[in-house]
Image 1 (cartoon, rainbow, N blue to C red):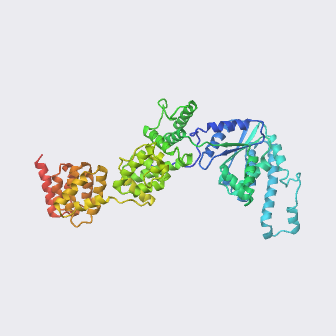
Image 2 (image 1 turned 90 degrees about the vertical axis):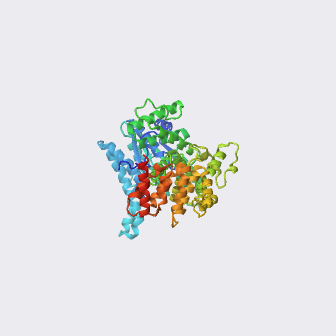
Length: 579
């Protein structure tokens, strides 16, 4: 349907554009690849999970492939099918891509064929080693298969590295062969070791360069795990990795300004920015970053397409919320925006009216500070506003100690509470109840003890007591009145006779006019239970026009008692006569 809200989700795929200011990382890697003083060269691109390593490799690959003197080979050990010989898989991938590049060169193809033959014999040996006892082999054949071979034997890996060096040195017009290795930190420890061994023992020859993207700590742990538990395995893992990687490059954590621009660019895509518009926005951010200007997505007037101001405001707000927290990396930002998109759809479908900025702030509370969210959700409805007010006052006061936070609120929520928008004056009742149900979190009572007492009096038999309760209820803050009236209708639905319920709530809405929608909706839900006093009360209200639909339905729909229908028709006729 045309009016259905659209859900835009972001995947984990690396970006083809520099949305994160990674040119500062890519430039020195390109320079290092071209430097002749370290040959062969191994570069490690390090960052935690989701830090943008694959995006850097994409950007780096595009830069290097533009140089005709470079051959760029991309590989992902995590995706190898033959997990019994990961080392061989990497070597085969390098050889295959070289063969494809020099398909018409007979000499090069012949050298590659000889190298593949050596590798094939090594794989046969691996297979024999695993299955010799279950296969029908003659003893002399087994002896032949496992006889050690010298460097000149074309069935041995002993001479592979020298032969590979000859191949690479003879590649015409090639200054560097660059192997880009991604997702190494996703591999199991044996595959990590096999990949590093294939690089160090067989492929690290002059004119070769390797760019290995991985979480450095996870790779070290994999090396240590492959060595078995010992006091020296950790230290050996560090030295082993340092011996292979000559140039470690650590990706920076996103600064607030870069996070804001990244979020703004992602939201621009959800608004319909095409590739040209996105590239123009990314270049605009890069230019302002180089000039030290903030925000990076500021001064967009000269661009043909620019994102909506609301999206930019959301990006700034989310960046403020993330700046001191664990979400400030690209993948986690995407995941948060996905959660925001899903929650937006849910709130609309449940008819929960909440501003995008407020929704985003509440999601940050749920995601980053769950225990403090549970404190807010668990407070009674009338207490929530006061709790948020005290929370924000504490957060905004630089003199307040961490220990002075409201009870049940963690001190690390100070930054969250101080960020806009302020929530103390917002009616979050319906949203909090919805969010708590989705998270399986306990919610507080809908009314305080005082409100419960007043509602009980309001629905009682004593008229003076009812009127006194009404006066007290009408003096509450409007958000508390709304919650109290919702509670009143929940209690009143169980009554056999609902005439008193509607008599008093109609009077209540006359005093606080923004509550009239609650009365009208409840009346339509209980249409068949209404007595003749209800249309009369609605007809005599100064807000009669807001009840017109209810009176019309009581006068015309089947199933309505005759006395109620008559009373409603009289009200309609009276209204016509007074016109």
